[in-house]
Length: 62
Image (cartoon, rainbow, N blue to C red; front, side, top):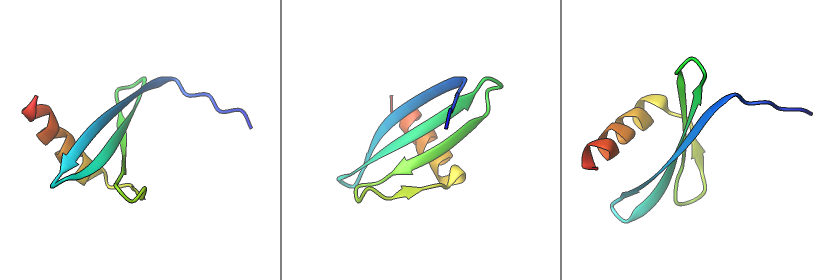
């Protein structure tokens, strides 16, 4: 299997009430974003609306 990705990845660390999360943002060449979230139990969740809000909160904190 040959996989090619043209775009960019961004990783954001986030701590909510002492629990650590990682948000992964995959941006294609057209500027579209797709998010995934890894929580403290290693669970992967796909919820773009929630992740978008979390990233907006995180960016405001900086």
